[in-house]
Image 1 (cartoon, rainbow, N blue to C red):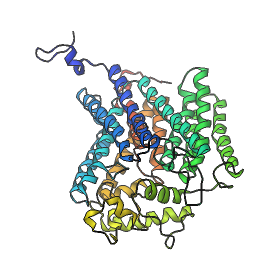
Image 2: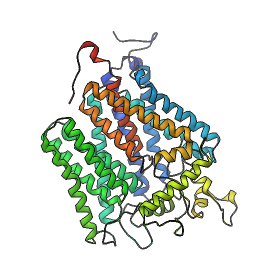
Image 3: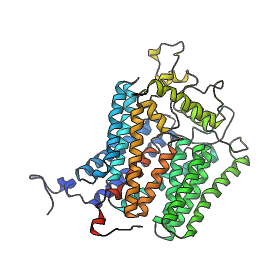
Length: 483
């Protein structure tokens, strides 16, 4: 007999009567919306004359609210096991400390909603927590595989638009990285080539893992095609993140194949990573793309000139007297060094969520500061930046060292729980989620959080601890091994 509260109907008590399988299906759909809706709303400024990139945050908000409701249901139904209390408590601490940071920030509005065009304020952090809890509440492998399929679909959509951007130079803010240099960089629906590089790197690892996880010849062929597509487009992000991410994805995919004891022929999929990547380099060197005739990295010009200065108006242009913008090592070293100075000055509570730019501002020009928007002020402050491409430093600078420590505890707790769960279940899909989470943790050393990538990261992180939450099958002497 279905459970009911007082005299209410069975239909109105759907939460009480919801099965694990039905909840898992809803949860996977809610998580899929977290990155597909973000991509959809990012398309609006790309395909219209209005460059209102704040619209992208609408997709995150819609999916965030959906997953907050699902997370609450997961808690009510007790799908979250007490054994993940450490990462859950650390996430809770991060949210509380972000609020403390907000009250000590430069701009409370930005703290809540994030910088215009970036959208990673406290609301985004709350949504990310919802994604993690929702994913950790999933109880079926079928729902987790649905999520992996969604990551592949998202990668395909980003890659197809990326191809249009690369070979036509249209529908992109990253065709030019200087007034004279045209590279036609791919950004897809991810707002920046650097953020696309993270999305595609994880997508490559998922596609390789699909050779183990997905049944059927057609599914495996689609996975190989996806690997080729993703690695090819990833090279057109012209970034250190793209190269490191592609190589890391190949390593993680190989680990997945070997650990799952899949046929060794699947290791040939690693060639499907590097051959298309090499082909992309050859195409650039042939002079077929833009007005360049040799392949090189453009991290500095992309993140500083094309993205924050030209697209979002969240910083000034780079200062050529201080930094060699074409030296990738110097760019990241300078960003990290200056951010360390900000951390030493704002170590306890940070500058405020998504407000790394503010303490760097040094002039308002000749205009009245009260009549200028923060974007107007940013543009006239040469040498400033709004992001450091190291999420751990970015967290410490904007939300304080305690938040950075809590982030580290969260990630280490998730990895520990995932490893423990995998050792117990030997589930291939748990291993896949664990490897994807590990990739994200490593990539965060050379990139930062974004609304394009971070929802995917927290979704797979939550899924990596699912088996750890499951009832202890060892007590009954039965240990299930799933494919």
